Length: 288
Image (cartoon, rainbow, N blue to C red; front, side, top):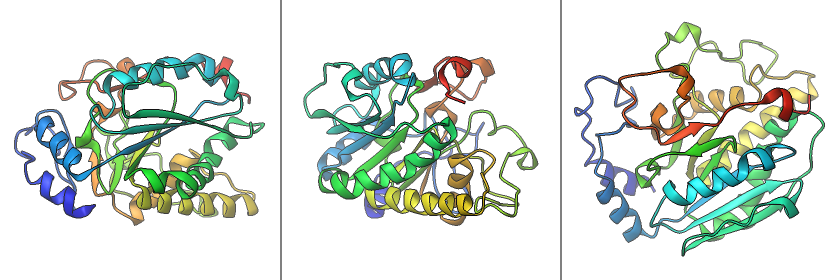
């Protein structure tokens, strides 16, 4: 997988966006509009036989509120031209909407338990993703992308986002100094970290199936250890994800174009919105 990354990434124009950081200190590209040729990426990934699993959790009221718009917009913008399999995790499979899918795209529904607290739903998704990678995804897909359901695709979210290990810059933190990043600083938690490279958003992460399985396994084990010690990380699975990417650097970083909140207001460096936060109604949707 890294061989493919290096081959196609040689075409990236890192100097085309002098207004933003386009490369990390460990030489991973940060993907922004204007840096890449979409046709070249698509042709290379088609030639290599890349295929993508998309995982999304729609539990409780989140299914009716968000899932249809998420899936319908994904059909318009996500990895067009590549085989895609949706894995919808829900406690009410009978309520999953019937979405018309393009050729080479399919949907599988996986029943999961509805935990009493939304925090547990958020954290336990790591185990569920790892389990389905082991039982199914690794046999049929080369890559995995994991998404929160309360988002809507607005523009191309294509093969330029694929890589061995993929993290996303959080829209609210990428402009801020590092001292303001909300890492977990509780020394009792496995997610504790004093500093880091960036602040990553757990609403989107991905990579090869092997890399995503390693990430979800590690985060789940850290969550379990915290639970045994009666500790909960500050931002739940996102805190553990940030700790993992600090220890295991991602090979590719997505700019906030790939998950933007329009309530932030105008930013000159955001030339296109590829995925947009849907309106949040936590008071009505979350259990506790």
